[in-house]
Length: 431
Image 1: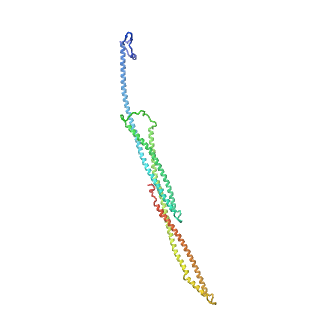
Image 2: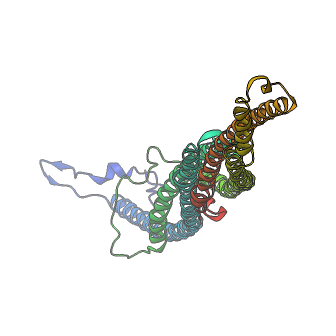
Image 3: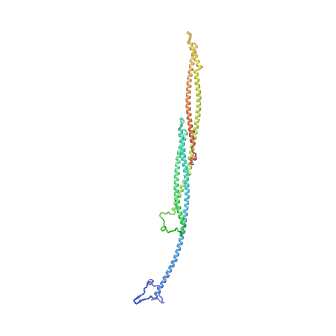
């Protein structure tokens, strides 16, 4: 039954049941719906349309709001990403410039080490090719000394000491050269690491800088599905900075070691050069003393030779005088006279042949003259022996003077001449 008031309540009607209400068909004809059913159906359609319209309007406004919110959020995210890309590119640019500065420093350090290596090689050549040759040549030439001068004198000792110092200096310089070469290798390895990092930073900076400059509507933009992920092996920002700083610290450590080596080696080169120069001065001073001593000995020997020659002249003159005295007056005449007198007196007749005083005197005279002749002959032999000894002494003196002359030629004209090519301290330190 319809409610009171003559109105039908359609709110309690199941609309779904009214969607396909079929008219009652009987065998007598088509039956129409009632008015209430028509009104309820129309009202339900109106309500459904209103609800759909309201819902659509809500959805439209909500879509507009969501779209605006999404647009704003997207713009904000783009702005944040852009700012982060800019900050990132600035960080990368900072480290890139730092790496570039350090690479330039390492190149300069490598150049300085190469110069130091060249100095060490020059010092090695100066000691091995020049000084050692000079010392060995001096030792070899001094073996040409003869006689008593072939001794192990102060010059020989100083030359041996100089040779030992040169060999030691060569070993030290070889060690210096190996240290410099090893440090150059370390510097180059550190520089290569910096250059690789520098190249990576440059590429990363260009990529991030280009990404930070990209704006919506850029024709180069396309979709890359699947890129919104973390790639395998990606490092964190802390790890990235730590690795970069580690490379820079290692390079700086090697550069500091190189600087320290460059500070130490020139001092060591200077010290070695000064020691070698001091020993060379000792050798030259000993050689000068030896030359002076040899000249003094030669001068004394020449003076003795002069005295010997003068004495030989006097001895020869004395021998000639003795020979003339033996052969000539008055001894020979007196002997002839005495012998003639004795011979003539042998012819005295008979008892006149007596041993009288004149006979004794003549006989004593003959004997005395004979003894005088024997003494003079003995003196002649002594004079001849003395002259022979003087001649022997003369030969020995002349030989010794020749020895001294040979020693002076070796020391003064051969050794001192070649030692004039001894390098300076500036050359020894590698300049």
